[in-house]
Amino acid sequence: MLKVLNLVGKFENKNVIFQPSFERQLRLLTNSAVKLSDEKNKDSKQLKNSKESQSFVLNLFKGNLQSSQVFPYPQVLNNDQTETLQALLDPVTKFFNEVNNPAKNEELEAVQPSTLEQLWELGLFALQVPTDLGGLGLNNTQYARLVETVGSDLGVAITLGAHQSIGFKGILLFGTPEQKAKYLPRVSTGKEFAAFCLTEPSSGSDAGSIKTRAVLSPDGKHYIMNGSKIWISNGGLAEIMTVFAQTPIKDESGNEVDKVTAFIVERKFGGVTNGPPEKKMGIKASNTTEVYYEDVKIPIENVLGGVGNGFKVAMNILNNGRFGMAAGLSGTMRIVMKKAVEHANNRKQFGKIINNFGAIQEKLARMALVHYVTESLAFMISGNMDSNSKDYHLEAAISKVFASEAAWFVTDEGIQILGGMGFMKDCGLEKIMRDLRIFRIFEGTNDILRLFIALTGIQFAGSHLKELQKAFKNPAANLTLILDEVKKRAVRSVGLDSGPDMSHLVHSKLAPEAAVLSKLIIEFGQAIEKVLIKHGKNIIDEQFILNRIANATIDVYTTAVVLSRASQSLKLNLSSSEHELLLAQLWTYEASERVRLNLVATADSEKLKSYKKLSELSKNVTKNEGVVQISPLNF
Ligand code: MYA
Image (cartoon, rainbow, N blue to C red):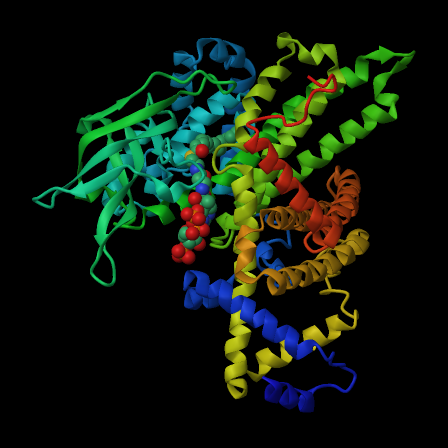
């Protein structure tokens, strides 16, 4: 490697200063990268990913700007698609404003039958099914806009979402032409409900550990499935289910191993039953049950996405649907904000309308801020997906985490603004708050998704370093790659790197904020390298650090997203553009402060000590099976 560096020196600009630690740094980094990659023995795929990813978030982990999916803000609808959407929005909005009754649905603990019927008639159960198979044929952006409206009743939203966002989404994404032709009309005009059946009593976040099993029948024509699922949305309604089960397969050495396979299961195959609807804290109108499979005979044609590929099928369905949560919850937040603002504009206390008080202004401004971010995320990701992006899984996970926490914050603050009135059932906000609680838990808990974001990103950064290591083994063939990297590192090591130039990507009014973002990207990449050097493969177990990395990731990505959207609005001279400018300026300022704190918190010795203390405290509490300290009364 030293030889390579000498060689590089000959070609380099004299102004570039090499730090003495540079070679050691690269060696440590590439060693860490090897360890990380070896851990899962997937070098070749990671190398491919490393070269090809268009994801802003993945590339952020290498300290690189990949702007293609963020700038400019996606505008994917053509005139026809806009017209179709507008024509649908009118009746759907009217229906949710005037016909659907969230309180009645909650009281019934089911969506009113007449409401369900009208939802089918409006086509809301088959928004993305192709028109020739009975659906409305909407793209993701059109879907996002309609789902925003549906967010006014989260019980109904989950009934619709469990059906199409995950229930039959696997058929849309992975179905054979025959499977699509057979099932998509049934879940659309046929009015048969669908469900997504993954979670089991001993398998929640650890989705790969399911125990439901399906084995091939002796004649090889069927799989016989046995097992049970819990907390299945639409479990008591669904006729058609995407079910995940372990199936025995032969591995490369000819040994039999269990791997997850996805199946399309019809209730009428026999042996499928369900428990009673669960009693829940919120989204009571949505039907949630256990589902049992007893010797269910599934034709082999109903394997979805290939035998043994079920884990990937499940993950991709979830990835594909997550932006819908940001869209739906953006709609929910609009309703909450309207109520809070109405109150703030009319309530008089201490001789003044309360919207004049700074304490209320800060709440309203922060509510507006996180709503703007959520809505911008939803349409950024739907736009990326409509442009055939395959690299959006981390962005989609961020949108789910952010939206579920933003909606909780907005509703909590909304209730606070309304005071005692907000606490009363009649106001409607307490129901929304109860409904919202599950959004931080299901479709991947926010805790698991944070780890997923951080670890996937770190692995990507590690794979890049592995690529570098390989390049150093054959320098002649990889000179450009090596030179670029060495130059980059040398500039950074003397603090001269202000980051990639982003001024051409944003509106001139947001140039200072773009410069802040550029710097953050560099700082982020450097912090990840440090983490890799220090922890190597052991980073997998450092969840206190991974959480801080995930939070920094969310802040950097959302900053890029709002800068993009606000720039677009300024460019189009929209009536809200000056308001959006303020939102983007404030978000960049506050998010960048948080990013820096979180990055420091990945390595700072005092912080690391505090994680040890937190861990110790937790152990004390678990050992004591609850609160440890003696009462102040000493007995
Ligand atoms: S449905 C139930 C939801 N359940 C979950 O989300 C489960 C969460 N768990 C997981 O996601 C996984 O088990 C995790 C990985 C992430 C923990 N995309 O060794 P691994 C690949 C692509 O890391 P594990 C519900 O709640 C990975 O690269 N690939 O795996 C209903 C690796 O590949 P390879 C992925 O440690 C709610 C392989 O898999 C992903 O076991 C109703 C193994 O990876 C990924 N994401 O666990 C909602 N993850 O081996 C209704 C991993 O090739 C909808 N991999 O390297 C409503 C919404 C809309 C409506 C409107 C609302 C208002």
